[in-house]
Length: 238
Image 1 (cartoon, helix red, strand yellow):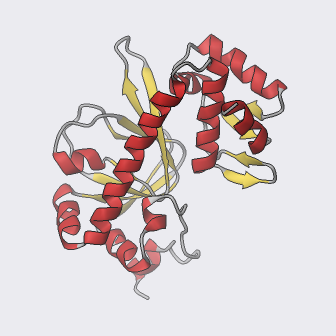
Image 2 (cartoon, one colour):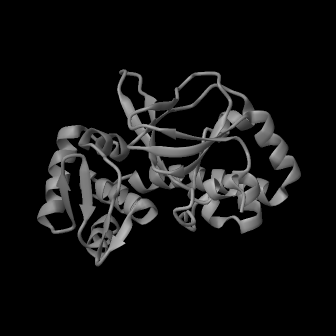
């Protein structure tokens, strides 16, 4: 196996694996290898801004390992947490596809490894590889469906229910199951939970305390752990 192939598979430390629901996890091995042959592998430190809202750059990132968060600037100049992406996902593909300014700022949450792919190379790959193109389309549709579902789910819900749904969705999508619960391996602050829940921070503090008292979650400094997924689901979808 060539050195570049070893690097794509984890640099000799065993094959990388990604969640089945992610773009890389869902691609057949041959197509995944062709996608991972694009661009250049780069490692980033924690708290590095990878993409900045409104910039006119058009490359994309294929996340191999680590976690990033996407934020947007609100009308009152706050940073609203829009989404979280992990190894296996694409980020920046909207600008790579349509050439328009960035719609969000993307920042690393801990160390991140990614392949940086230029727009021309990415578009050429999509033209040549219909299965990759289809997978990218499905990935984008999934992101839009999640955003729509969040808007619909939140209609008429109180803050505690919205917060439970946010934490449940994060745990299901990105958490690592641990017994009856799940561990979320990336730092998340209460202000970020507030923006995801569409509620004021003091209200989220009270709702989070209710979830802790119910035994559904425990919290620490920038951490949330789900102690009982079934209980959390019951609170999220009563």
